[in-house]
Image 1: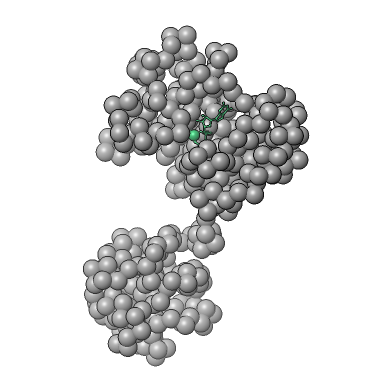
Image 2: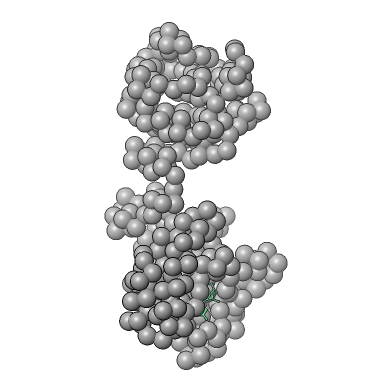
Length: 380
Ligand code: GDP
Ligand code: MN
């Protein structure tokens, strides 16, 4: 789950990282009011969950409250990379001296979190990583020991940060690590972390990604989820405990088990088809869950055929079949359905589905080919 800049910065502040004074507004007049409270120059920042807001015109400096209102009106009417701007953050403007990049992510190969920093912070860190990777310092963090003081000092030294800032930098680096660890984040990033003309270090921007698998232990973060940024189908899937990821193809896939779901997608591709989604209905395919999954798959207008691939182990195949039938009764799909059912009582299950005009298959290869043909409108 992605957090907005203002949400990330609120978390940063809790861990002792200095952030600019400011608040979120949903209307332009609110933005003006915040600017009045802050006094002086402010920066009006679109809150959308994509990078490159600055370049898209979604971040603007205002000289006075009237100007802030004017800019907020403009920004609140924008769409950035397809996402509507519904909120702006109005922050006290900083007098920037230097822009630094500081972030933590998980280095899967090293099986450890890694802190990254660069003196070349600001809006083009991806370019820096591509063209001059040596300008990015990396330090692995032992998750049990946490970030050590000497590591933070090493980073500060390597990004040529003036010694006057080392103490504060150490607190910020440590705060970022604590925020990352405490929220089960997979990314915590400050870009830019700036030094100001009046000699302060401040986190001007913030970005966090939190591991969805850990959300159960973060009810406070769960509330921060912005439903505007995911498709309706993804929201529904979460509600029913289904793992669903929409893709570009036209073969809807309904499978029990994540491994089997991936295999199914691979086999569809092997025979020249394109899966429309990844979907794992999990164990115990109840009619309710199957119906929800079917509705979700069919809400994608690209889907031209649905491929069920279910292994009935603990749940018997005839039960699964009854679940599917109940779901069909409710959803009444118009696209062809291909079913491969194996496991306990597979024969009975298949018969039930064949009687309901579903195309049945015995092997996955057979099912994939039938689904691809059906999607092209070829009878099988
Ligand atoms: P991003 O483009 O989505 O990464 O948004 P950022 O919050 O990182 O802002 C992009 C750039 O805008 C920063 O790198 C700064 O150069 C500039 N910027 C952001 N806030 C301020 C501010 O308070 N004062 C000044 N002068 N520039 C700012
Ligand atoms: Mn940024």
